[in-house]
Length: 219
Image (tube, rainbow, N blue to C red; front, side):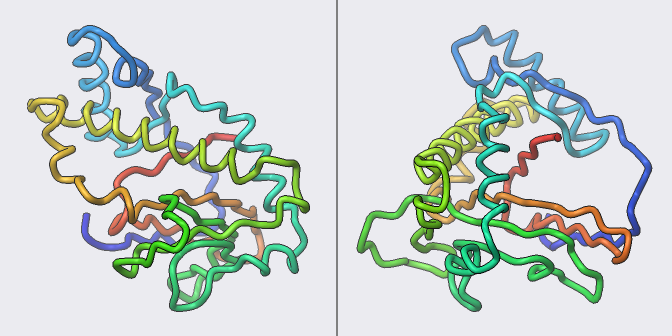
């Protein structure tokens, strides 16, 4: 997919059944048969709905959601203190509707961070940049460490999915990884807080032009 796909719809009551896939065999030592079974499930899900839920990933999602709630509960002034700079790197807080791609309002706020660049390391391209963090005094201690751990864990899960998708295509597990080399320093973790809105047309953008995987916590 090479473009940003946008779906502008009123609040939607329709539901789509998404497959749930246990990806544990892709993340820890397991038999080739077990990995191929997961690969077959990935293939079916991608051919049917194009998106799926995963279990067996080892990420403590409850703790993550609690940390996200704490972040987005900060005052507007506190969140604006770490806002993304227009025209700069996509690191920091993004306010309600600030990523709307049309006249419709995208009713979400967000926080972006990513690859932990070394202190003083200059960016090499427009997708790199140093992470910015809210003051730890505003939150329960260890927010940054928790988010860095989440980033690392999500990368591990993503790598496992790439191996599974390689198998799903009938290739060696390393096949797709060969196309991803050098991309880790531009990768982003994005925390989203979506609002339910009955007053505005809600717009959901799928930024497929720059992400490889989108992992969502169902709540």
